Length: 482
Length: 95
Image 1: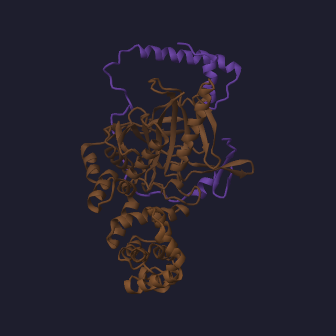
Image 2: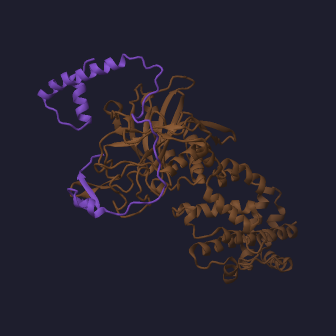
């Protein structure tokens, strides 16, 4: 049987405010446990919350960036449940009047089309603390530094139909919040966390199936895997004639396994009610207009500019514009390196591969945009070959030397581009390989000829101690061999 | 409106309150009376009334995003039943 996959997302975005949503405690990451948890965060009796204006400004900026309506009068509710990392016994959140109303985001599909994913709403709420389940003499350790960190929870409509679309949306949202500067986007530190709602229905049917929710995915890769895993699990059950249980599931990315966390029947009844400690928050036009005026360039506009200004193709522009830090790195590289296409290739190739391999973000790159730009200049003007460029990049990355030209000099990577000198080498090498030359000249299939041409390159590179310009060698070879 | 024993037991579980058999019967009566009162309130016509989020007719004051709190962990942990390495210790939570 053919199935339609229906996916909706809930995304928790940690706001990059200096302080918590309801108290003046610092939100800086990595502090000693509980040194940033004060009386309000700990829910000491007699304390009262005072909301952080910046959290509202950030939420409004987000709303404007996703074409949403801004609720002028928003209300906080209490969501009641017991857990040790939630000192108050309730999470202060928004239910009836969230600050950001319906909006949408466009995502680029693989076939080049743009699809609109609707946002149901986004609301402000506080994060919980962290429970550490390592063994403390049979007890659980609680760190409340994170308790009270402002979040916006973004809830989409079920508008995505496969893992690729869901990941495209997640990446797009990541690009938007990092470009806005309202979230640091650092997924490894939990700055963005995704819950995925998935259901299947017979192809073409307009009746939605029972959905499951897979919670707390903190990387795009895990999200993609978790969706594939859950779709397959549901498909197996349905095709065996079974039914899906509405439940919350946890996905273990390291093992590619999921398990049920709680089913709907035993789900919490959160007993929401308006928080009596907080008055309604009113946002006026001036506040919204001020936020609108402060909006920076967003990924869609940046992509269009990259295509226009640097002549990048759709794919390259989309990729580089999606992340504000990567985009800034690219522009810095082009500023020094001039050749935008070459700069784009290097950033998406060697540079990104190296970042990924070492689990580093762009901000943590040991190579600067200027350095990569200098390298691009030397590739473009044929001073070094691409093989030589990789060696220079390696030396920059490991910090062996920080100057591109000095590395080229020290390692003797300068290409020989003097045609007279290269021709001499070609003559010498061909003279030593008469059999191969004869074979080549008898071959008529151009594909095979091309392959055989490669056979001369090894000895030529060896003769030039790796410094001959391969492009020129190729041209000379073809000329000489006829 | 009546409230069943199972409703009471469920609410007790959610609120983490231990309620014994005899109390359930008394609560059935008391809570039933409260719900009757709510029923009376529900009978009022509220079609043209905006839902009330707060009894005070005022709006929330907001605070600038500036750190105003310092580390007082030692004072807070002095009154905690158990701590270790700066963490509050609680009976083990099973995920």
